[in-house]
Length: 351
Length: 178
Image (cartoon, rainbow over all chains, first blue to last red; front, side):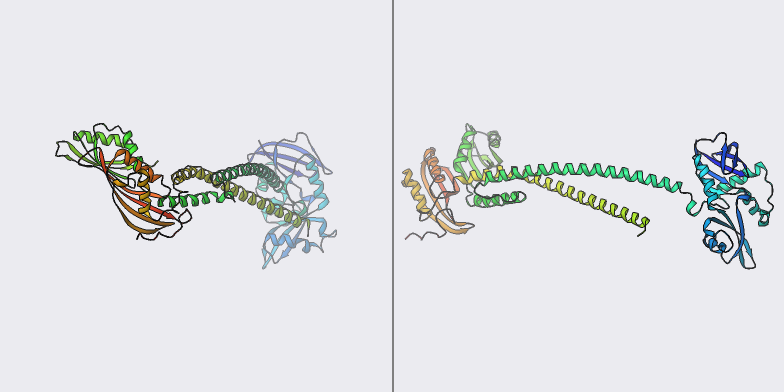
């Protein structure tokens, strides 16, 4: 289970509070002499770490500024303290907190530490693979909570429980955090960056695989297209040997156009086929049927004749339906010779 | 340009190139697939039409190649058919039924009445018409049993002589008979 570690440095000694789901689960003492951390058992699986420095390691200045926005105050701090800090503001890391307003002006407490000292502190913790999320001060938090900044000179002594309570508050929101500028905590950003990089690599792999798949499919489609074009040209050339086929895509249209021409020609020669009709009628084996008249006009045929009875007319119709289409009895009546005279209309089936 | 800006510019350029390649590939893929679908549809269409084409050609094979160069008109064409069969005496009448311009040619109709022909003679007449050197088309045929002899038939046929442009005969109708 991932834990939160709070290193409370109080002078040369300190206490490590380990919080598991925001509950204190472990307390371990350590020493921090000459920026060397000495701890018996460093807990594993630390997800977040905080370091609290004693007041003695920090420097302070109370400033009167016309600004109340903390962000703006932080921006102007190096310039405000330039003339005050002997070693040059560029060698320090600054943070601030607003103390309040007095006579129309805002008071801010500037907190600063030498860069090389902060670096030593951070490097030491990194040796234990601990990357503090914030470098704060629980003693300063106590003083700020009283509202009496002058207590910095003579700070109150804090009990163990109070220190733990202040540590919990600092973890929520640090009163001051000296991990700024070049020392800003970037693990979250780095983690996000790594995730983004991993995501980008995976996306690139997926794109590469998809791209390869698309390319392979396109190659296969191209081959199939070429084969189809050859087939189209072959069919067309077979059907119209005297003609140059041209582009494969237009051949179907050309073929349709030729068929249309042939259909128009065919219409010219459309007519009746009496021989064919007589031959088909003869195949019907219409025994006992005496046709008296056959009229053929185009594909329409009218048969007139006589049969012994009405049911025979139905019989003829059934037989004719096997050879012709649209067979219909248009007339059936008793004839003078006591037989049934019929008129049947039908059409030739298309060959 | 500072390193941060340069890196950002590099990433933007890479992203733009990747997007362009993806868009181009997708476009080409979609185009190739649409083209292939079109070709498959064309091939299916052509295979289906091939049968229709053959059927039309079979229908026309007996007709094209015939010529009306040596025929003056429909009446003369009918005359020649019956003469070749020796059935001229069976013709009751041959009446010209008009000439009309049709798409691709001229159609000249004639109505022929034949009396007391046997079934065999009828079959020969129809066969001769279908296989005449000129393009003769039977428009209408009426076959009726004779009253006196059920073995004999009266035939009334309307025949068209077709003169097409380009298929022998030229486009000019023949001069009317004197």
